[in-house]
Image (cartoon, rainbow, N blue to C red; front, side, top):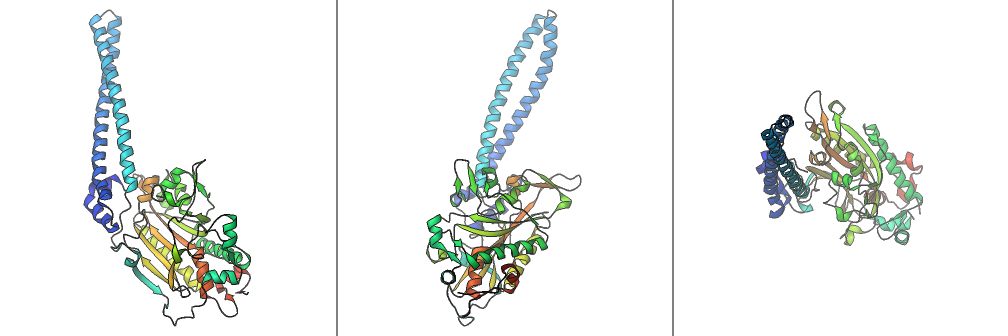
Length: 433
């Protein structure tokens, strides 16, 4: 969530930035309400501190008066009793103030949870995906670039690589069952992506697939994406929609050594998303499923270097697509299409000539302090005051559409060729019928 200090000191910049997201007037109005609540919180704290100081003074006076009273000074005894009543009233007032302060802080936090991150200055204005900015194109999308061939769902059936009907039988729609060389290709991609990340300096972790409410709130899935998450209500656990959620929370409520930054983590996990409201051709085949595999890279960075780290992550993801030989483009997302918690996001898309459309395969984002402020992840350099880190993450890569891209791009009359870089992992170079 946004820092109160930032809202107070740079309110005009905050509001100007948030207008890129095309927010409602109601949400923008939360900014002013947060400032009012923070003023109230400060006034409450000031009164409470003054009352506490007075009660301490009275306590010392009461001790002396009681001693005099025990020595027969009736006037002192009366004053002691009066001051005791005064202190009791002060304690009651402090209790009232404490209760009010908790309510004010709760209301303020509830509003802050509803305010998205401020887009970076390079984020283009816009409301729709069509307003995103293409920053790199490495693909020939013309009709003559390559024979369109079959879409991946027909190839999956033809070569018996995955089965949606069986997945529906076992669970429900949107849960594919991979089999044979389809399962081998999936496993090969996971291992390849993990190995490449480890070579790039990321430490591998295997996190839980279920997280508690605090963890889901820390990265911004709650309350923003609650309707998209599978919820185990009896235990109040959530199935993760991405490894970003548990991995970024590893350092929640911790102060890191500044010399250890950047800290780089990579994790493979299945991901679970309800994808409520999805329909049409966008959900056909592997284009959009409820359970899928993904390798996620996460970084904890010094604020002065986070955008250099973001570029490093972009280069890493791009290198994977180059090694796989897939046609791709890189987009800088506009304010209206960015994720709730992101300050700047780049999407990687692979082009499907069979479907005549772009398929998103990765999002790489810098969240600046938005997530770390929620999770209280800070760092300290020497004797300096602890400072919030910047958090970043990206898909490296999400598998469903990468598999779709490989099947469609590498199909031939003889079968589906396996990209050379994957052959050591699959053990075969061709998928035949």
